Image (tube, rainbow, N blue to C red):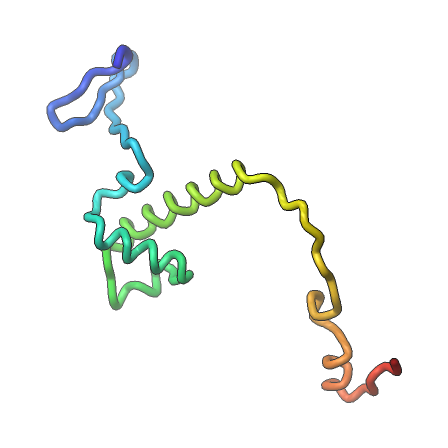
Length: 114
C-alpha cells in the first residue's frame, strides 16, 4: 500500500489524512462474529425475521445483527444492479389491486353477469 501503512493492530493508517481504517476482503468478513452465528443470522435474514424479534433468542448482539443485515442488504442490492432488468410480462387481474367480484359479493352487492 503506497497511501497507507499498517498499524500493530492490523488496521491501516492513511499517510495523507492520518485516518485509521480496516480493509476487509469480503462482506462475510465485515462482521467480527464466528461463522456459526453468521450462518444463523443469514438464515434468519432469509426467513425475514427482523432484529428486534431476535431479542429473546439472540444469536448476536442487536448492533452486530443490524450491521450484518445492512451488509447483506447491500450485497443483495449490488446483485440486483448487476442482473439484467426484468424483461418478462406481468399478468394483472383484479386480485392484484384488491378488488374483484368476491369483494363485491362480500359487501352484499350482486355478482356481475358473465
